Length: 193
Length: 400
Image 1 (cartoon, rainbow over the protein chains, first blue to last red):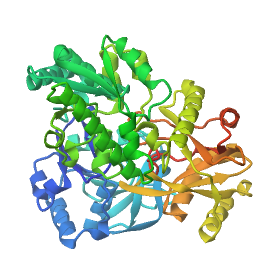
Image 2 (image 1 turned 90 degrees about the vertical axis):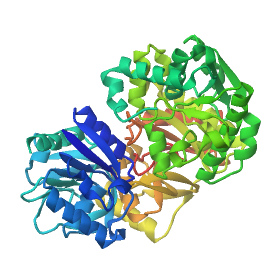
Image 3 (image 1 turned 180 degrees about the vertical axis):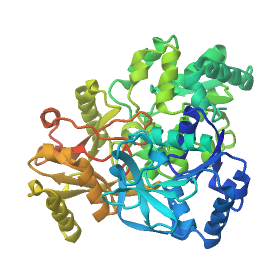
Image 4 (image 1 turned 90 degrees about the horizontal axis):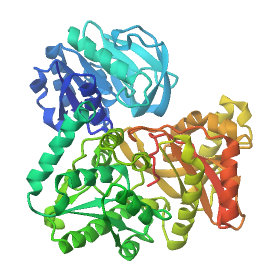
């Protein structure tokens, strides 16, 4: 099993690679420059994880988002977006991302509001670590909200009838209580795909 | 020198990781000379130790006394390495560092000035010793934070496009560049290095320079060294990942719309917060929010019930960040010092394994007050003592 980890110049991108390797999968690391205009070079990977970064979705040009949306339609295999990656998936598929009225940093409690294999075996409420100024304010049509926090309604999403997921918090950092379980659940989804 | 597979190899097969690194160092170095720069921390010690295992006869290990060290640091580091069978040379470079860094107020300017002197001094040492290579203990968080523009770590050059060969005349070797602190400690243990070294808390390259927040001068440096010693001695046995003190100027109460809004919201959450006051300082501190650097204002709250404040640290910080986006940090007032004093002291403690994210532990008010009393008794230049409430993110562990 080979996972593509896409770094978006975020602080924890390298930790995603570390977690995937620790959980026994192989992975290759790409920067956003490696894949911009060329998402299709990821076609042969069994799954993709897109990390966080300082970029703000409204600053991307439409074409970039459209190309990513086209790729997602063709790729079909499991994709997990983290923080900016989560916002990227939401925006590309027609949702809305804006500056958060209440940005979240550090410890945050999230509630699982819909069961999903991504959160398999986890309690319905647990603490995660956050670092975001923007948030998804409206999900695309065919997307379900899986989790929320007191300050952010859309903490996790799943695209219906696909294996595309997004989480606003950071499962790759040590302070997110069940972070490693969530990445393991995603890798299980990839291996069963 | 190190690729992403090393990320897990070091824990799954440390002996293979070590063999690989030794072979790499031997092959690259050949018969040329190497200087390893150590700080006394575990990262540079492991990097130097790997070099010593590889090319013991071609190696000089040096320690720069930058003048920003803690009390007795140079002699402690010297005896620590002696216990590993390695003799280190202490290079006194105090004056060169003081000349270029004292008086600067901006955090990044201080860090960059420090880095420049650091490599200039090393260049002289490398030249003197006719060496071709410099070994340093750069690890993953160092280049991640520097590359991400969060803060300039002094030991990151290649990753930001600086070429030491051209600039300083030596090639830099970084055998641990892909590892995190917990993995370096694992490796140190596997190599049988002294427990004292493995457990040593991280100490930043620029040392007390960046713990004298804002402008650093010799007086503020002396105060910072004194309070660092008191805080370290008191918190040593708590199992915290890092614990230290920083010095700021005197606090000033903040009044105005934003401040009222903040206070009202806090009281709305819990009316026990009635009477809470908000303060700020002339200095700024570094933070990281949504993967971007912030260099923002430091705020302090004061309230009679310090327990309540510490218990609710996450709420207090999170509301502050929402209402005052320029804030980088929130600290809690523990006690007053001398009314004539001009320095504030902040006690900082965090819990983390990899130093990429960090949580703030609860310390009992009795203990914080005990430490404060000791500080006040020792130095009448101190006007107030605080405890830092801010996790990473939104703050960084160090202030600058």
